[in-house]
Image 1 (tube, rainbow, N blue to C red):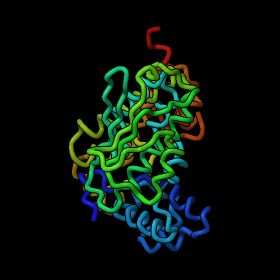
Image 2: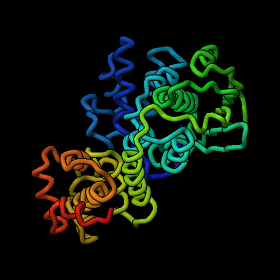
Image 3: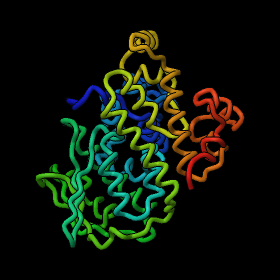
Length: 341
């Protein structure tokens, strides 16, 4: 039985579901009927964030473990993770300067993205220790969740870093599973089971390791969007905060009103009524988010108007220019040219 820590994170990203479904299909177990049994629409798309609850996802994992009879499915699931699964945080990590900056990003923003497990880092040279922290009582889901998180972290690190890092210690907060021999192949480190907590440790000299796709301008843009996401979570009150939080999760791909309603556990009609009671509409909130992001990009980057249009969800620059003038009374070029420097 799972007990989730917060009703604000009662849903999981659609990418989690699609990722597991693709893995089942590849293994010869058609995902569609399994998803139906768990109350999940098999026609789920990447744009359908908020359609699946964490409890449904846990049920899907339980079914997947049973049908495949593979107790180490979490390792394989995590190893196939992609940096794009992390939304705007993934873009920020991809463009970060070095491993130290990537860790700072994870420390500040990861918990908002992943409602199940987050990380705490302790840097005490000559070591860095990343400790996994559960945001819920995971029960039978625990081993899969920890394995998936750690293996995905290893996979993403392999993409970001020019040279792989060999951990010098891996501790796990659960008993040794039947597939324990697979850990060394994944992490290149002998694990310690039944530990007080799950953690992975490596030498602190790697903190200054440059990342392969570092782009400081894009890193700044992504950090600003992550900050907006964080502020939407922490500073605004009530329903407006929750809606803005959902709008800021992924760059250029804003969820529709029905998707946000599903995430918040209410119908479109109910969401519209509650927003109207607060004197705002969904479209007005979407326009606010787009306007603020666009202004940041114009003032703090050298991105073209066409690139900015894409980043705020417009397929054509002309449509973006028209919308921006409606929001601000100015053309995008006026905002950029009037900024100093």
